[in-house]
Image (cartoon, rainbow, N blue to C red; front, side, top):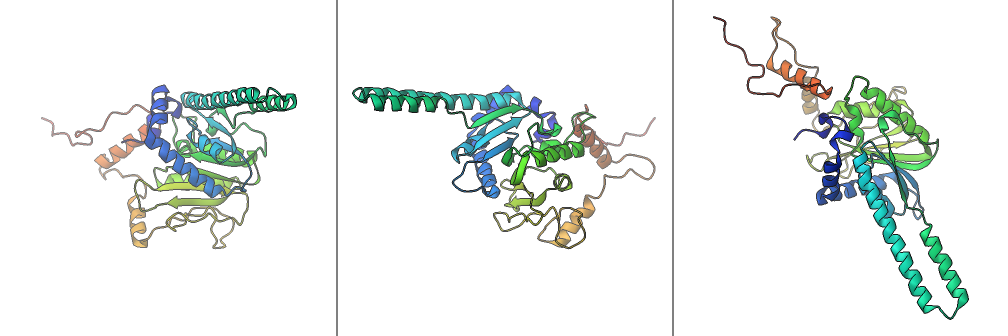
Length: 338
């Protein structure tokens, strides 16, 4: 199964049909809930207090629903209008349920308290207060790659579930992944209050994507690192970019005890930021690095190998260009001429 990031822009992939399918899938709902719970745990928010949280790439509002259950107020932004329509339906449905409960309780109070005018007035005031209570969630249609359009020091925290990796791909010549990531992290640094944290869960296609994301975050001033949960599992493996304003902050360990690579090393080699790739077998990591060093080369006589052709076609697909499908004839040597 190909990655959805390779099919085009997120707003085109998550159309009305895909948004409805995404929101109604019990499997996706369970995964989103599990990831959001983990993100809230990594935020380490003050207990017994409501926080104002930004949800980047909120989608259909599944992560926002978990934030509401924890007593937080949130604002979600997403590039897909169809996904936002699903989230808006969820918010409106909850608002109507709250209004219905408030009307029902006020009717019961009126029937039981007809003889006491003072109690009746207080119940009416309480029901009016319930009707005016705002929804804990709000939505914004926006592309995070263009920066976040909020006032400085607005939010207490930020989460993002399965959205950050979209910035590593370009659909047009104007979309440069490094610039879009830098613009996003720079605006995120501004809209968060000092002392706040951000937890951004993402699915990197390669280790180069994880390094690019970490370097762009460190370049604008963030400290922190990548937390990897279940690193030895293919399906359960999750990457969380945990960011903080504290320069001495270190990313926590993953659920299996393996701590992710830090944005800033502790070896005293100046202020240069980077990612240390951890692996159980150093020889295996070194071998993998040799294999993936640079694109395949052409033949000495100027001919093109099959590996070079497949790599070139994959590069063109990532740029959004029309490319022929790979077949058994791709890179096949033609017979000699007559």
